[in-house]
Length: 125
Image 1 (cartoon, rainbow, N blue to C red):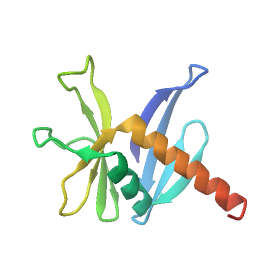
Image 2 (image 1 turned 90 degrees about the horizontal axis):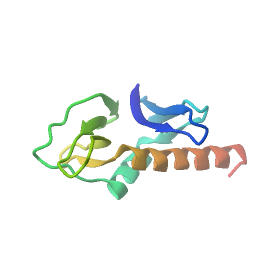
Image 3 (image 1 turned 30 degrees about the vertical axis):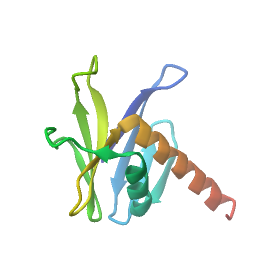
Image 4 (image 1 turned 180 degrees about the horizontal axis):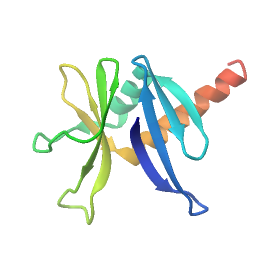
């Protein structure tokens, strides 16, 4: 299980979003109760949309989740321009440079898609 994001909700409660994978799909579970799954190809599309190439000087370490032929990794990095470190998600693709994006941004997009697809499935769309 990989921690994707931690946030404080409007009521002050702390909430985390977690991911697991069976290789073809990524299951996403939120402490607030929302859960669902997305095809690994959808996660790849989101990371290609929002991600940027990871600087070669940044070590790729931290917790990782295998998603079929891809690896999703959580990285905490403190850039010189930041007052404090930030959490990022790194998408490693075979034969291509890793992509990185702020964890909160990617997680929000994944939660939105998970919700949209689960509502569509429930309504027969």
